[in-house]
Length: 198
Image (tube, rainbow, N blue to C red; front, side, top):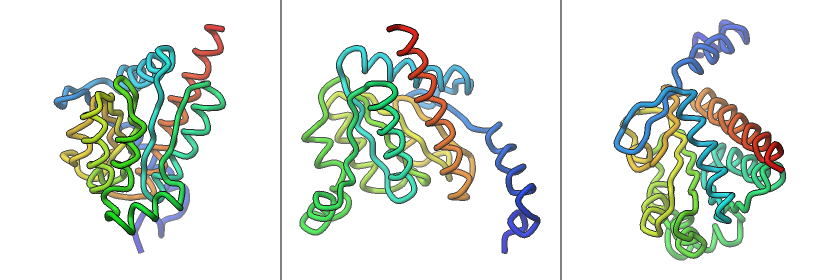
């Protein structure tokens, strides 16, 4: 058993708190941004795409799919932004069965993405082939790419993003919780800004 888990909930949560202080944000090409500036840039990006009538496309596997589903809900309902997720079982399984799992997000991104749209790609490892392939498809369509990753700092998805939120941990629980927390901050703040502008 991991020492932090065996030591109890307070130790586990304290470790998570320390990790949150080390979350990194980079721009395209690896330019480091402060956490406040980087996350503010993500919020600005959402609002800008929304105000231009663009949409957010959201992708993730497993726990990351749950995160993007929640973010999708908040963007549509609270931010009043057009947003879509691509993990509805019939289409996902048809694509996986016929063309391979690596295509399940690239194919619908190719169908739905328009120039200037925003792809939000969430992957704990940043190495999921289907996510990386979809990121490449989104760039080819002229989309902007916001990534949420963890594990290795040189992961492929982080290298392709225009704005990248990175959690320096290889623990799925910590990475997914951090992604969810940052996503909540982004959508809650975007909601507040949209409400203030009405």
